[in-house]
Length: 428
Image 1 (cartoon, one colour):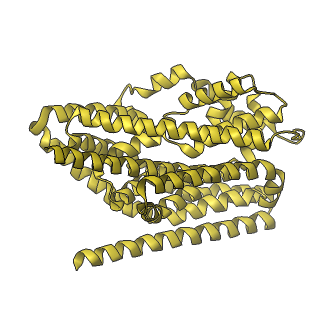
Image 2 (tube, one colour):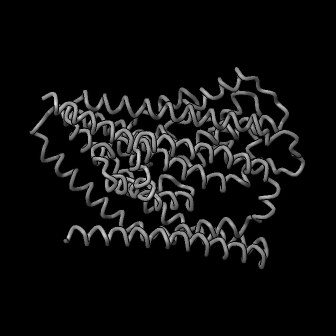
Image 3 (cartoon, helix red, strand yellow):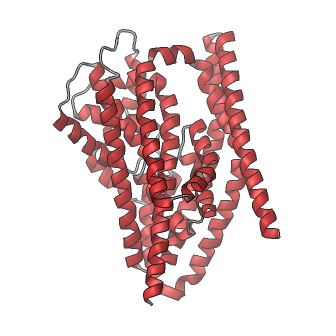
């Protein structure tokens, strides 16, 4: 009876949070549009910078949880897996899924930007190229060599301080494997980390109460300084083509989900509605990492699988961002009248596959990678200015897509592992 009551309460809280976020998005949009249409540009910009603090505070609250959550849950997950062969088996499945999904996402972006040609015949005369300087200044740090160096942390404390998820994952894997090899002697340490992870997950419930406020601030801030009608008209072809591409990716991901999870895919989609909306509203898939962890465990994926898969997914499985990167890179080339043959585009695709990994915590990461890739293929990196005005709205969709992709990958690998465990148990 108590368990049933608890479940009802959880569903009620979940429904309320989702409703509150949707209302916050609506109110934020209305307030932003009113501010934009009734006050001067200077006042609107001042309002935007102040109200966005609400979103910043919410994202920072989430960010303070991510490093300890990844560290504790991943170590406990590996220790519970018990041996190196299990870690290798699950890791192999995970990376196989991630790279396949990334390749498909990149190909979808490449197909639709070539088929619909949103950049062909674009008028560049009224584009402010100076706005791209913030992004282009960061492109020097994105290269294959720097990516390899970036994987390994110099210090776990530095990695935690800067929320470098991939570096924390690398350290945690080594720590977890070492702990698993020692055996019973380290049980008190693993138990302490396990209890710590539950405390942090409890903190998630408190932090998520701020989600509607954060979403309200993010949406109001953008609409206060952007004329949505003008943006929609000016960038109709680019944004419309992007939506066709991202919708195709969603349909494909959901179909793959039904293929592997059958009717449970419907349950998964219901579980992740709240994380999807938060990611959409705040344009940050990182902001829902703790909430997504909780929802996947409630869905029935074992905690040891969730704690292993999700941190890896946030570094290697950003499906929405991948689709956008090829789409945006080739769009800029089209806008400048640069013809890229199929071989060059495939090379670009492979470059994006490698250089885009492990940058989940970098602000405007997709744009930074696009700018760096354009530079490698002699496409003017200032072309980023073409997509900057509409990028926030594209980011909403790609952030939500990243969440869907990671939820699906974790659930499917969790189901595979469950089947594998049953198979091993029957042999014993």
